[in-house]
Image (cartoon, rainbow, N blue to C red):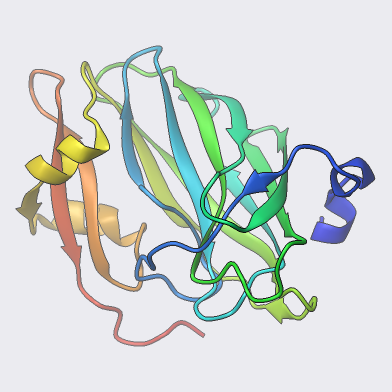
Length: 227
């Protein structure tokens, strides 16, 4: 279902608006949908969140639709919140169909922004798994439009995020301070599904005591852009 048929008329007529604006690029291909912080933790039965975005390069985004696929046996989706960031105000709506979330953003405020990394919404969830279990989410861009309704081709692949259940969780600031680098092949492979164009990803790895340990993984740059 495309953006124009997905959005309900009341949304465009003035339901609550969300703020969204471009952020730092995360080594994505133009047209990709992805998770801004792709590897997160939650306590057993506890709540967590992941933020989904699209990457538009230097092009402004007028509207975008993405899907997020997840395992409902591992995660209970509680809602999708508007992302408040910067001066550009956009409208956001979401709905759930089985194990798929549909999220739509419409920008009626600017013809020149947002550009780059464009956040669409923050997905709130409850972790249903046991300590040490990791479950995957997959974000896929369905349609991205410029403010003049010209299409930005969506990425061909779904990109991965994951949620690891840990006995204790770590704040983003502490993660950045404690992250240890790793070139372990399985971790590089795990990270590659999150940042196919290359870059650095911090993965959450549970140790023998059930504690989340942040591990920084450097992904080799892609040899060529995807067609």
